[in-house]
Amino acid sequence: MLPADLTPAQVAQRLEPYRPKTVAAGRRTRRAAVAAILRFDGAGPGAGPEVLLIERAVNAADRWSGHVSFPGGHWEERDPDLLATSIRETREEVGVDLGRAGRLLGLLPPLKAVARQRILPMTITPFVFHLAEAHPVVLGAEAAGWFWLPLAAAASGVLDGRHEYRLGPVPLQFPCWRHDGHVVWGLTLQMLRSLLATVAR
Image (cartoon, rainbow, N blue to C red):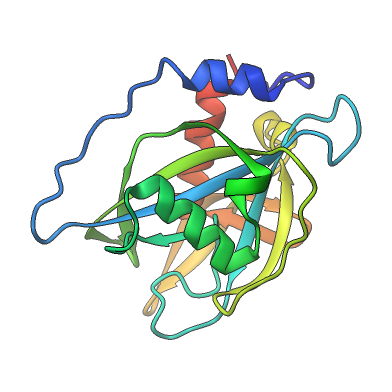
């Protein structure tokens, strides 16, 4: 269970001693970063933190077209590091300036990217932020929608469900969370479960 009175300082403390495994980046390995943005006062006192998620725009060129995800994307040469990537991509996708309105709490281990049941030559590193001040969400071209997911509800199991994904003619079943018509599954669900396992101690 997630403590209802969990604070940003406690999240930062629980993430601080964590040392994520490093993933060697060979010449053919790409790197990406996402931002897990938390707010602690959006649903009233004692309700616990919420995390900002987006619905990706439908795009045939996007392996995760239409999926729920964190703001984020690929590292580019103009980015000094992956933290900068997460901040830049968040600004581009949801208009939130984490450099001004956010506070870095920590990071989670990088994951190998998977799309359509294939492991890709890319790693994704999630950075965890506290949205320290109110900030409007202004969607960029890559996002079709956004919402706040209550982490206490997710941790309690009340959002648990199964999601059917078709890979060609084959229907596959995956665990998911369902919230207000949104389906959270795949890599995003995996990263959120990693976050909960780290902070719900």
